Length: 252
Ligand SMILES: [Zn+2]
Image (cartoon, rainbow, N blue to C red; front, top):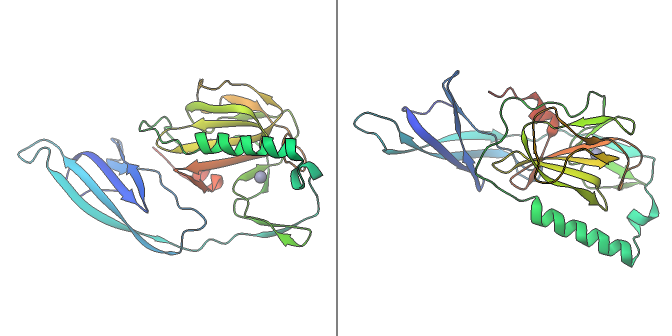
């Protein structure tokens, strides 16, 4: 967006989120990434912006203004699912229940991280060169019962297919969890994470820095999966966003 004056810095708050902006010298525009959860009610929401002016007499002056964004209702498919998952996922025994709870704790501890530094730059790249087998937001009907919406994007890949980092970042998690199977999470900074599930093999370690396109693991069918496929998810400041939308964005 173009602010009313030349700025040194720009920062926004929107729907309870802190949104840091970056300046793109080529287009001379300020930009930031933000998203809404599937639960957000359609409507118009204002982003409150604060900037600091650059140079001249008024240097360092704080400038406040706002812009409005409309959020419309999305359309998501309903899919009848014939395949079933193993009983250990629908009726876990006490030992399995313990592993489930450990997994929930790991996700609680790691997936809400918000670092101030941005590590991603430029457009996001597809994690696998393959067909999409299930889109974000679809409601899957298992045995006549509607399950919670699908919060990721599925790629139809056989086991052993290289899975690429969608952008630059730091490996936040690379470990097996009960439902996710072998699970890689990349932290791209400013609360943006990409998640790669059901891998057969890890190609990165926690704490390692990765570049866009770098292989982070091989696809598989570990954890709660009806067969080998790649499930990727995008999390931004606690909300799951549509990975396909992120992949379509033209970012500087
Ligand atoms: Zn999936």
